[in-house]
Structure formats: C-alpha cells, structure tokens
Image 1 (spheres, helix red, strand yellow):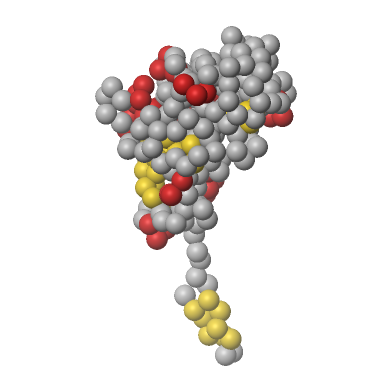
Image 2 (image 1 turned 180 degrees about the vertical axis):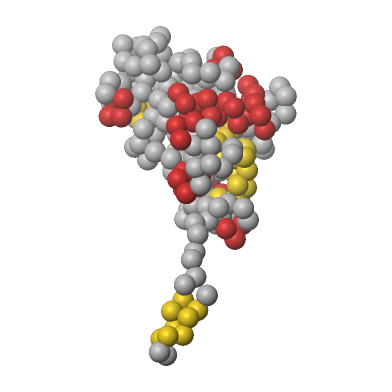
Length: 223
C-alpha cells in the first residue's frame, strides 16, 4: 500500500522470495526453495537458475540434509560416457548430478522410486554420475569421497564445480586403473542402494559404461 505523507510517497509493498509455484515465480534452485520455504513438501516446483534459458518443473527433495536437492528426469537423452561431453541436461542449463553425500544418493533413489514407472529404477543408475578423474591409477587404498569436505578421501577425483562429492565411506576394489580421463564410473550394482545409505559399488572402465537414455540432471546448486 502506498502512503502519501507530506508529498512523499512511501511504498510498503513486500516482495516474498520465489516459491516455485509458477514459471513466473520460479526459484533459482531447490536449495534456494528449501532455504526460503523449509516447510514445503518434496515435489515438483518451477526452477530457473541463471544458467537455464527457461524455467522447468523439477523435482525437489525437501527431506535429505535440510532439503534442496533438485532433479530433472531425462528420459530420451543422448547416452554419454564422459562428463565433458554434452548430455540431455546441457541445452536446459543443467548437468549430470554431482553426488554430494550418501543422503544425496538416497534423495536420488527416492525421487526415481516415487516418480518414475515401476521397473525404471535401474535405468537411472548405470553410472555414478558426475564423479571423475583426469588420470588413471590404482586408488583401491583410497576412500572414494572428497578429501577436502570429508577429511579423508581422494585428491585425484572431483566433480565439475570442485565441490563436495561422495561415493563411499570405505575402500573398495575400484578404481583400479583401467580408466580414461573424464570418464563415468559404471554403477553396475547401483540398484543395491535400495533407497538406503549404502556405499556405492562401481567399475572404472569408463569406455565401457554410459548413462543410457535415462538419467538425472540438476542445477547442482546445493553444495
């Protein structure tokens, strides 16, 4: 309401943060939505980051780690083997999920379980998504998680934004060195995640593993 006091107009209009209810009120990311509206339920909300040409309805998990992990379901995208090539999220201003933690993995699992047709679960987990390395070597004595954010882990692996990433809390028989730079790890036992908080099993023969046509992409703005 505008008030005219002595010729000075004071506008008392209050602007609330975008709540994702419409394309015009698209939140910048699921993380922003969770920060501004922590009591919202998990579900589909309009999201548009500065990298996205258009607002999209994306699934936002509002449970894990305070909520804010956002996902867009690619169902007919190009199958990719490497993180440095175009994927189905590229023209949308999105990218393969950069898995931050075991709770992020559970959010991914729950999103696919709850929102995709029965039997589609395994199709979305043929790789370990956005974790990669620039070198091939044997890392079987190293825990596959960010050494910066978890205290111990691999300094040779990363995600594109150099942020937090997680695959395991224990050592594993992979990566054992049969790898190509920027390659995706094959998630051959990924369905065993079973919606829990399980260490991820994988293989690093990157030339042999690809996403297939079904995968999750994200703004990756929840750190």
